Image 1: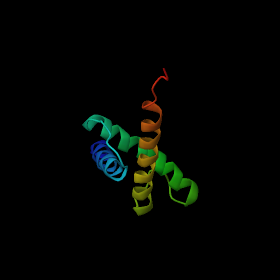
Image 2: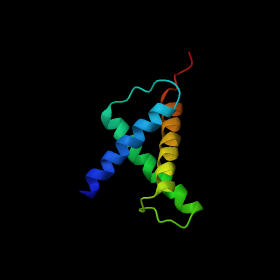
Image 3: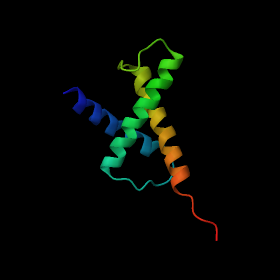
Image 4: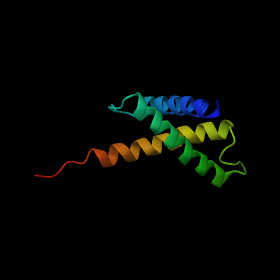
Length: 87
């Protein structure tokens, strides 16, 4: 049950990050879910560096950090995947 909740939470975080980030992102549901999960890991580690919380704890700072981490991952993905060869 824990893994299923983690996937659902990752999907919600991915949707929030895509809604906050300006522009259009061409992603499916699976990519949005993976974005949210990766953002949760990045945000969890960033929050753990600043606070005394563990990475696996579920709290408000972790949820905000997850969205911030997903925004960072989304920014990096769109920045480096949209490069085109100069001709």
